[in-house]
Image (cartoon, rainbow, N blue to C red; front, side, top):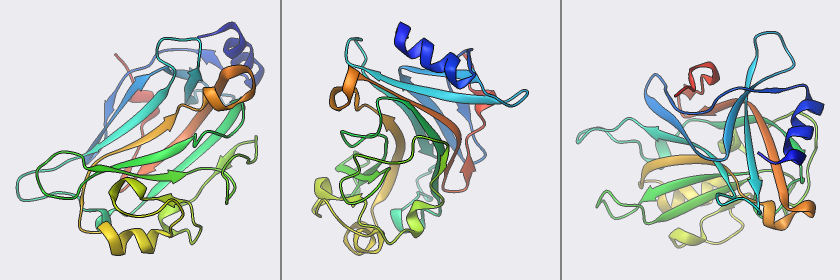
Length: 212
């Protein structure tokens, strides 16, 4: 973590702890890149800090959700019930398509990803700005905004979720990432985002269980 990021963290009232992975009721949450669990402002509160620093070898931070699946039971996109996050941008602002959700889809049934549907965070239509305080997105799948990018799976950049479902609603969801990787696009080259709550489908991230 950079000195700049540390100063931002302590200004937010957080203290560095640990980072890793944990299981949810019907899916698995894990982390990749520059991600740490830190103590929040409330007593006994744990939050997740994701950083994108262009000077670091790994210039991104990701929380990944993998749904439970079997040969007879998979999660299709049109069955995905929830996609929401409560977050605060503490360095760099919103930009470069980050932060965002990325939904990896298998559209041809071979078990491999054929592309992602991106769900951008921030203010439409450019998603380069947004509130710097604590924000709760609510369920983005219920949004009518043109914040869904299905260009990797045959769609376009600006789509509603209903449009995406018409296109690839029967595709299998292989994973859902909440990604911070926009350091290259923001002033200072460092983008930092704190997550206090994350929900995907029927599962809520248990931050306290993110451990080695």
